Length: 246
Image: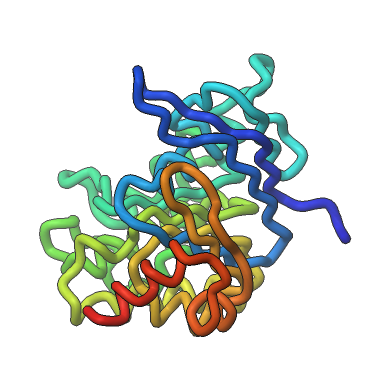
């Protein structure tokens, strides 16, 4: 097997007395779409945030695209260019246009000239179907469009891996589809993606692998059909049964 592009080993995370991650191992292959599901508080979002060091793991190791993320010598801002992240809240600057939001990191972090940043920014907005909204501010965009701008901002830096933390949970139901469509397009283009989400239909149709987490541990993982149709662990069965009743 080729070397995984993401390799996390023995990740523990404590918040004071709270032990949120209890020795998680995760490997993700290049071009793989991995979906992480589980009840609230199971550690899914914390795991994502440990991968790009938005949270410092209490112990363990994280290597992304050959970079040791926990090595004190690692330039974390440079390393984060390889790991795009899209959050539940869009985190856009309200006073800047869509294009301004996308080009900011290109100029400040990647050191691109204004002309180059704008060209890359427009290309990224086009990829998410918002070429005609480049001059709009977030207040002039729907929630789904704002989230697509946030995705454009991440992919403009040409990351090797994309992390999605509940990317559709703040959206009205009718706007969810447009964001999932962009994520499907990214998958088609070969982007490696790790997605924490409650969109089980999307997980079933698009994921290569589904990971079920509970109480800070990976309980079970496998292809979507195995996890959704025939889970081997009782906790997984209970969780799947619960969400299918809703």
